[in-house]
Image (cartoon, rainbow, N blue to C red; front, side, top):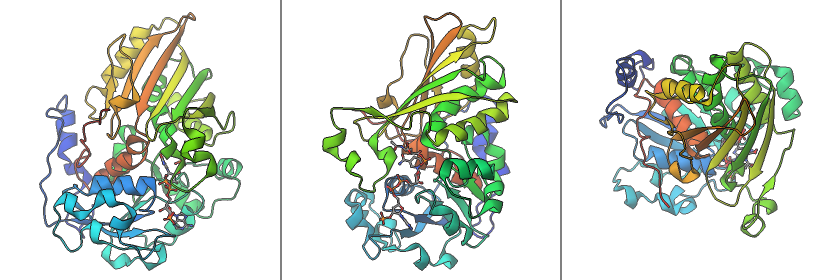
Length: 390
Ligand SMILES: NC(=O)C1=CN([C@@H]2O[C@H](COP(=O)(O)OP(=O)(O)OC[C@H]3O[C@@H](n4cnc5c(N)ncnc54)[C@H](OP(=O)(O)O)[C@@H]3O)[C@@H](O)[C@H]2O)C=CC1
Ligand SMILES: CC(=O)N[C@@H](CCC(=O)OP(=O)(O)O)C(=O)O
């Protein structure tokens, strides 16, 4: 509950109320604009996830962006960094519209004007910055810094000891569909990684019910190049990405411990995944193709039925009918995840396909879903963009 902005507590969320009454219809919860605005800072607004959260917030009826940061572009007006977010496009005549704001360095943010924070900074640099914020602020951190609970596991995979271990333990892992209650009362939410989001959405409900085995999970995942961030890297140049693809991080990607940590929570025992990500020549979009072994006596129809039942009332997760195949274009620019389930030719095995937009459900959209809950707003506020095609 945050009284400073007058936004009411999570328990009064009307989205939750419709959900408990059955399927959430109509799915779009309309929240009127009000003078009662939450004031947020977007740290790292000049990056890809920062730009995306600012795009989504431009039409949010109850959140006002008061501060935006960049290291290299501090001092520039935001519209110069991202001309697609010009104020005239939004018909905003408000002097404090985000489009009129100037980017500043993090240390120059006036924290008195801000009560919540989206932190879109590179992992490793984030933990000290968040540890230095006033404790009264609600924070959604998009980096990996607060996702792992075990300090030794963090040090092993990220190559350094954590600088804010108390906060690391306190942070709530915000895969929204599975953690609504905890997110609603958290002051620091660790937003999940994009690959882990696409992987956990189908696997958590299946492991929870023991429908698949925990030690034989093979994940082949593909990401658009925006997943690597805006920082210039030669290997991410158009000429080096277009008309080709490559795998990376084979057996060593840092999302492995994140996925295993979260799946173990529901499986109640050790989970081992074999995970290989790939870099694909498109700007946004992500697909995880997951090969699973079904428990004895379980059929592919049982898996699909379980996912349909679990996500029936969810606004953002959709299970396709048998035979239909997800495409990253089904979710581009939206907060949706689309799942498909298929029988493998190998007996006792099934294949699951999960697609998201890495910048929306994989990052900024889910961050906004979480912030809405933290502010006691309907979870889908400002998030019902229809996917773009082509
Ligand atoms: N891209 C994606 O699909 C996803 C990203 N994430 C995570 O979200 C976070 C942001 O990612 P993304 O937007 O892609 O990254 P970008 O590289 O595109 O943006 C990073 C931002 O952080 C700023 N920044 C860089 N270094 C510092 C520093 N030392 N101090 C203060 N500010 C700094 C940059 O400012 P400037 O460059 O202007 O100086 C920029 O605004 C990362 O932790 C990433 O791992 C999570 C899920 C998906
Ligand atoms: C294509 C690409 O490089 N993707 C990034 C994942 C981005 C993301 O979700 O991860 P974090 O938030 O954990 O950084 C990677 O593989 O490291």
